[in-house]
Length: 537
Image (cartoon, rainbow, N blue to C red; front, side, top):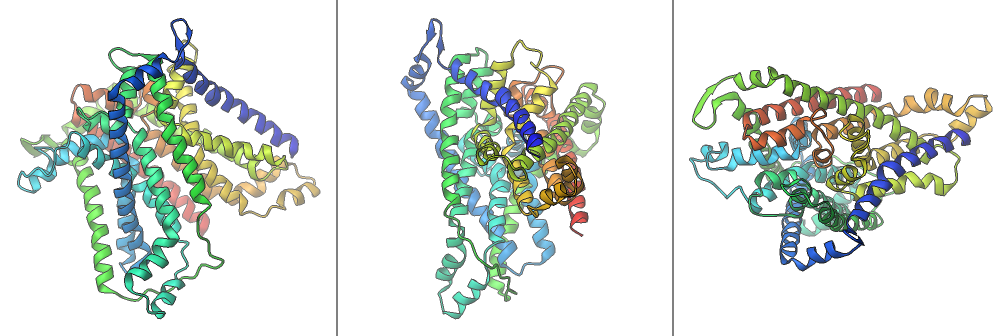
């Protein structure tokens, strides 16, 4: 067992050394390399410019504001699911609609917001031509951020809320606590660290996203668009861009450290009791109605993605047509791009599952030393601190003029590493629940470690492997922040094609491609969900 596990550890460590450590060293080096060697000139230039502080302040403001609002909305939906007598069917629909944004690329959110709340937007027309706010600038960016991070915040809060011991709700009621005190002590207090984690995680995602501000930012600059313009603008400046990328890393590192600290403050219960909730029309109507409004908010934005390409010419010719869909499917280049995305997503998911499973086995089911077993977890922590844009720039600098430049292999590897942290956590959690003596028993019976893994361990983690496959596939289909820097003409993906179509204002094609991504992700997620349910039965 030890020999095989050590072999997996060496191979995986070498992969991370080549595709994580070296690229990050390269981007760090580039930020200090002047015309005559080592120089801090680029950092000095950046910090001497008052505009950077304005940009950072704006980025912090819109990211933090969005994160707080998102957390409040996610809590409302989770509370409706766990603490009300709203019907089970309604709860399933609410949950599905809350998760809907994760199946679309963030760059689509911006265009959807324009066509929903703009002067000729769908929602604007529904309300008699009244425009609620100016979509370009801070309001549009914040709205996009909220939609983007809602599924992430909901998953965090919903998961923790399912582990709250509900008998304390009864105890609080019997003791005569007032409603607010009872709500605080039995719900908010146990969720405090998770709510903070939701704010931190949402903030980090908003701060490092460039798809939304690129679409609706207008003249309102944020750090992500500044970095993009430095590296891929009309006059690229790799040294200065690398310095901005290093600065962009700092809030992400701080976020992860804070999340690590918050994990220690979680409240745990020895026994988790469930109770039959009493009917309460006021409670159910309030929280259920609030969740419905949140779902309508999400649906209202993404409804434009379906409506706009389904008419002759929005907003002046509203006759139904399929010409925009036919145009896309008859365009060989767009069809090829879709096939590229399927190839990358499928390969990323398949290779990612194998890679995560192998490193998870080493971390949990091997007899290596503790420090060796912790290595993959520490690497996952590092990958979780690196924004996709920074990783993409690091790859662009490291692999230019090499055989890997602009290849599918590089895109697949970057996506696997970028999203490595969550799948590893899922895998470790699943493996730790299995009987730790299986390998020892199998060894006494003469079976090899690999044979034991395939015959005994693997059948018991099929559900988790399916979840990881879906996670990698969906994220590979919607990711844009890293791949925008490493795709080429022949390796174009749907998300990067959408960015290209924006320049030509071909929004009908953009929405058709977005629908294609949505349908593909829903099919894959649906199939994996069926596999998981079948395994549980």
